[in-house]
Length: 202
Image (cartoon, rainbow, N blue to C red):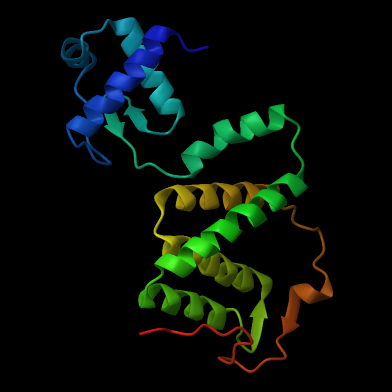
């Protein structure tokens, strides 16, 4: 359990990283220098660094130092997954959450999208409707289509929420031991002719 000193250290460390505009791969000062700079002792500093490391925001390399890591959705998944498991969630909960959030994302994308955003979505649709394809390729196109919608919303909060839900959904979809017939099929549609139409506005 984190102490008040550790939580305070996290806030100071994050402010230090932000104020000094430290990017991915930037090296943090030595522990002694950080203690002097932030006005704290070694114990709360170590606790704060440990918390940031668990959150995937920094990485300590032996004999090399502590470095800022690139923030990613994956770094948020472990603590979120832990909280969900504590509440005995069901797979259907993820599906309903995705449906609710993606409705908001689609509405926001309709208001904020650009021509380039629409072209990305159209390309993803056409990619999924080739003459012959395997399911993994179809899934890649579906992923690209949903990511294009997320990007078209131009809302960083919705982007993170959408990616978190999709990541959690992907983690909980079991792979069947034997692929049914619909896993590998020929599309009855001609390549490049989508049944879904996107109007590219000028």
